[in-house]
Length: 270
Image (cartoon, rainbow, N blue to C red; front, top):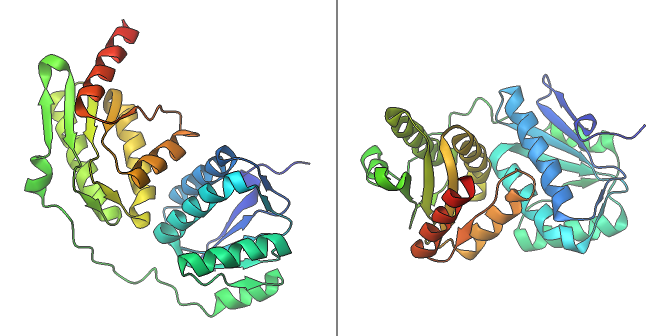
């Protein structure tokens, strides 16, 4: 019987462990990677717990070169957002070399073990971070966030300015999206979203929350979304997540091009 992605994700609530079974799995495209990691994010959100120890079975896993970049980016983002320690076991020789090369480049401890028992023993001595109260300093005040949200009623546009903003963690994301949701609710209607990403930085610790909150806001309040002037890394990540999350990235170089795209979308709707 073929394992589904859901079958490959299990939680031990007492041990605070999320076990991910990549055994025999072949990531032959970025789409496969994004689909798996989308589900991982959803399953973690369903638990109501933010932090888990990650126990990862890499036995017989294969990652094509075309998928490796996406695998590394999604894995880093998930670890930064939800891992209180990641341990891997049974890596094939080829995958072991890939992981070790990535560890040298990205400066992380690969924590590779020969078997599951050794990996579990390692997790058993890692300290839990769940009881630690993390106080985040917000990158923007409520007043600064409000100043970046404007409505153009005649054009049916909500104009959002993320230029030069750094989303350093989920608290930054939640503060901004709470404000966006509240402002949209006040209007009692949906809008075309026009979003300026010029020099916007989204840290790995913030990407999971950013993707989830952005998707929910678009479903609930958008007639369509167009983004412009993103930095190369932000643009790449937006396009990567769009592969499996059922939205068009609609990224343009300039505000004028983005406005023109919104006009096209209105005509398509008619």
